[in-house]
Image (cartoon, rainbow, N blue to C red):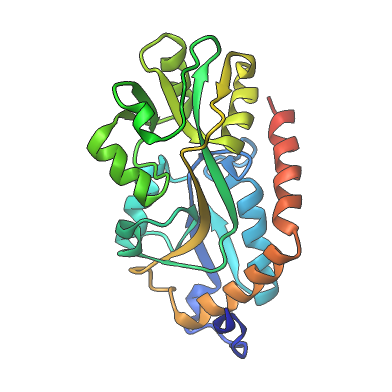
Length: 254
């Protein structure tokens, strides 16, 4: 962790990098979702945290809605955006993104099922032979992803609402989604009383800010400056405060 406390760098390597183009998963309330008042942008606890990190450093961020989570990852790979506001670690992503430490938060992922159709789930093999659904290109940790690719039937779709609707009409047996985001999304959709998360999570992963390795504004100096501020805010409990605030905000918008 000592690397986070290097002497501050007072000038960005490139003046054009005073504004960073950022995106993330638009299906991720209360951490990220589409801003109804500002079409084309994302709001939530993670964009709010990022602005608290960057503003004291003289760096502006534009957290844009550029489409699906799969498209966000593709644009990060190509260097068409500077940062991703929230990603789990996988070996594939490490190949094209630099991760900032520490993680923003840790998120457990649940097996969500319609009430009355619960089944015994203790570990991953209990999902074999069942039909699942989640967002296209979603990761729930590299170990689970590898197991799922080799052993499970999980259909990727463009919106998590579609996954939950597929479960309601018995097209799939379960939905894989984070506990926090699932609670908020189901309440927003008005179907929270129709689903339950099975007690055992499939994974619990750290969520990170990342820089595209191909982005011109990605520099060691800038990453260190952001990481130092991130460390301070995470350890002060600020992330939990923002999650509570934006969870209430998202619920009120339904």
